[in-house]
Amino acid sequence: MSSAARRVRSGSTRSLLVTMPGVAFQLIGTFVLPFAVGTLAAAVFEVSEVVETLPALATFTLLLLLPVSLAQILGTVLKSWRELRFHVQRRTLGIGRLFDVLYTHLGVITSRGWSLLFVSLVFVVLSLAGKWASLGMMAVLGLFLFYAVVGWTLLTSTFFVRTFERGLGRAHAGIERQVQPAVCLAGAEAEEVFLFRRVPVPWGYRLLVEDTLPLRLGGESRYVVTSAARDAEIERRGRIRRTPRGIYRLGPARLWYQDVLGITKVSVASLATADMKVLPRIRPVEILEPPRTEHQTPDVRTRPHRFPTEDHFRFKEYVAGDDTRRIHWKLSMRTGAMTVRHPENREITKRDVLLLLDSYVPRYAADAASIAAEGLLDQVVETALGLARTLVDRGDRVRLVTAALTPNLERIAIEEMLVTKGGATRWQDLGARVQWQSEIDVPGLIAEVGEEGHAIVITARFTPVPKSPEGALSTTWVFMDPATAFATDEPHWLRAMLERPAGMWSAIFTRPHPVGSDDNALLRRLGNAFTAWRTWNARAALQRLTRARMGRTAAELASRGDSVYRIEHTGQTVRLRGLVAGRGGLS
Image (tube, rainbow, N blue to C red; front, side, top):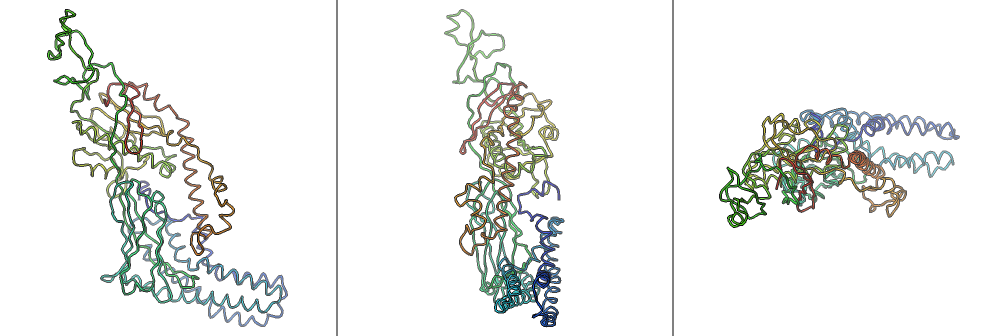
């Protein structure tokens, strides 16, 4: 899969820094840790009174722990095979995905189960240190409960996971995931729907569904299904928090069985996926203070109209070739010379317009832009679509050209579309597939199209603007300075955590969420903190980049002799304020 396709707004895998140590710990930690603790305690404390229990301990290990260990390895292979094959078919299998899948299926023990194991081991150490038999009995009971539940889950998991997978292949059975509506406008409400049809859920277990949604959508998907789903159809719904422009691939969601005690969980093949397309809105475009130009000769965009207009006029002496219908007879009689009216603002005629949507960003800033500058690109896309509608309504023949994801979302390619009245959905579909990319700059768009004409470039440049398209009679630049989007200094992410109402330390060592919520888990909260740091770091990097070029983009464009407009996005409308007059214009 190309780098462009990997950046499609889909859920990402966990870091190798988490999965690789996690796989090693899950394979050996569960069974080596008790012996390591026991050996260390025996070396430190007096254990002569319990030496006679060694044969019983060996028997316990041989009959319970060794089969449990083998069952864990065999079950992981069988449960991971189908999911790995699924990613091979989609060409999304890499080293990160491999360890993510293995870590998911090896992670049989929940945080509650680990707590039970660690507390039991602590009791073992305390009972040996204090020679407290009652505490030792509690430790043994805790360990027995832990390994009994883990052993039973590992023994049966492979079978009911296979039953689960075979059950999904039956008629009128399975798990269906969808977004309603699958295609919506930016900012509109949308719901995620899971439909469970006769899903096998064994007695004493629950089926849990969880998926981290793409960052721009926000939040997570979490659902619980009981054994009632075996003979019925159950629906679970959840509202998607945000619906910004773009194409999103949800899933595959993580599914697992969890026992009623919450000690173990068994992951099953994560195949629940759904696609969501959010179309950009087309905002009205207002042209404010168009720059006046002294160019009087007809250009590619404008020419004197056959009929006079009601706009402001200037007067000049008649020369051969002027429209005689513009002669001002009363003024001519007073001055004694033939005088004609000349419109102050040049009028629009139907011409070919090449509307170029610039989505280029240098490679060193691509990752940061995909995290912290998607909102800026949304405004650029809305400006392009709004301007396209304005020009078409005024009678121009407009072609929209940009670099975007192909419809199959596999690579970045140049897309060219003739903008026609009544075809707004097609423009919006193209706008939804536009994303920051480092492969095709504005000169590349012109070279691919290979035609002369008036070019209107809509851009929010992080780097110096390229040269004007060669061969074009005129060029208009409609730009938004990225520095305005990153003008506000955000507090350091650590300071933001310290200044939270509960405080950072309170948030770490207490339970900020309701009792029993999975959000209270320390690893989950550390993951949320990492996401906050990643977002802040990306924004800080772009802020440094844009401040170094503050005002330079406008100065570079002003020196070229082209018309320049600045984008002012108010939320409901887009205003274009003229800055520099050139050979082309929008007025």
